[in-house]
Image (cartoon, rainbow, N blue to C red; front, side, top):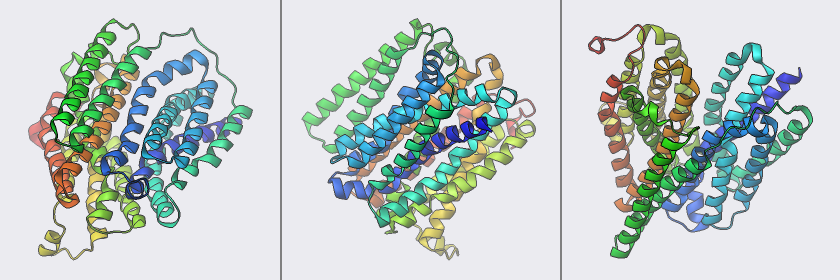
Length: 460
């Protein structure tokens, strides 16, 4: 019985992390009004969270092996809970962004640490129990926007962070009481320097985009150019560090393989396009279509409701379909739904669909979820069969590229919204561009493994 309670503790930690990945999106308008900032700075509350995750997650597994799973999970939970309190108390956007970074660092350690804990307590059914974690993230995708929309509409955006406090405190007490520390293996070498270079490169690139969006003056262009140049310099240092590192964050040897390179480039684009689009739908709904904050959260629900069954069906049919077919079909559905999302919704009435704005947006978001749900299981598994002995490295790379893409996609979206001069035009450009880029990325699918039982793309 005790180990099932421990599994529930780990699951609640993951649920908090998943909810906080989506709940902030519905509070954009409130951030802008109460803190007196533009959409660029409001968007940092999401993008900095991704940077925190990207920095911490590759290190979390090694830290867990070095210091013990209980210690790492407990410290992560304390950091996440304390930073949630600090986010709610923030008096300006700068402190809010800083504490959101700490929240991302704390939350990023939940999945590796929780997976290790479950592996220790359920050695005979490890795969099944860890597999159950995958069902938690879509639940967070449903709970987060709806709960966040209700809280912001009835109370204050600060309470979307305060709700973590009672859950976090209860979990901390339970972990200290019930969880035994795992055996610590020989301390591995941890690539802190590589993590520093990687996160710095992303951070300065995003700062460069923000500065250009703020003003087109020569001085701002010069500062943006300096930041972008420094970002490239840090990127060079990162790759040099990874070539020398015995236990690198990014295994350069894997990227020399064309299928792996194509897969991770596609993961980068997926993260940028899906996160860059999905994170701004509540702002799109409230600013362009004048929906309420509560409704702007509710219309995100169909995405998760579409993803869950589509992913489940695709996972069962992968052996029959192979990898390329579901990726090809899924990306086409997702890209077309994103493109249609940015168009004038009155077009739907002209062709005979008598739907209101919330219903039309919900339908398009449902299609986006179905498309991503079809493509994701295939994209996640496409390269594993080539190097099954390096599954952990491949999964880590996949998550890292997708999260980096998410951070860059959010920054690119805010850049477009700010320089376009109006939200309707900015969102039309954003959604149309993202959808077209995803369509143009389809050739990458043909460079990835076809799967065991499907290799002829002409059969589509």
